[in-house]
Amino acid sequence: MDGTLLYWNIGPKGSEDGPAARVPFAHDMAIWDMKWHPAGHMLATGSNDRQTKFWSRNRPGTAVADDDDDNEEASEIHQDEMELGNHVGIVIGKRGATIISMQRATGTKMYVDQARRTLHIEGTLKQITNVKKRVGALLDRVQTDSEQRQHQGSYGHYGHM
Image (cartoon, rainbow, N blue to C red; front, top):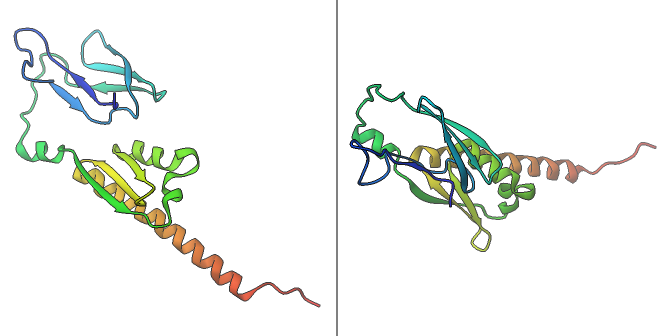
């Protein structure tokens, strides 16, 4: 119920040992409905996250390139974490908006451990690197804004007489 999309091929050339395809984090919440295009190359999914997504694959009967080990390794899911310090609220955002939009943009799953002040990230190595860059840029921007306000406040504002 984590929003992962799985499908199996059935029939004589089916995928008996497991799903034919797996799309981790396809949706932010559980997928409630799926419908295939009559030609079998498009899939529409509906989720409790209030999104409808469309997925495509090669049309049935079309040759598919073999996956190599590099491609398989690149899609492997990893976990990592990032220290947030006093900026937990900035990363979460108002009503979770910042972290939700970042998850959608990067295709990762993230949650904040508020007690430890860390951001936990699940995704491919490329996705995790992307998240760390985005969060780092966000925290740098917040730090720069804070320093500018302190600098302006140290001079004070005096009225003219």
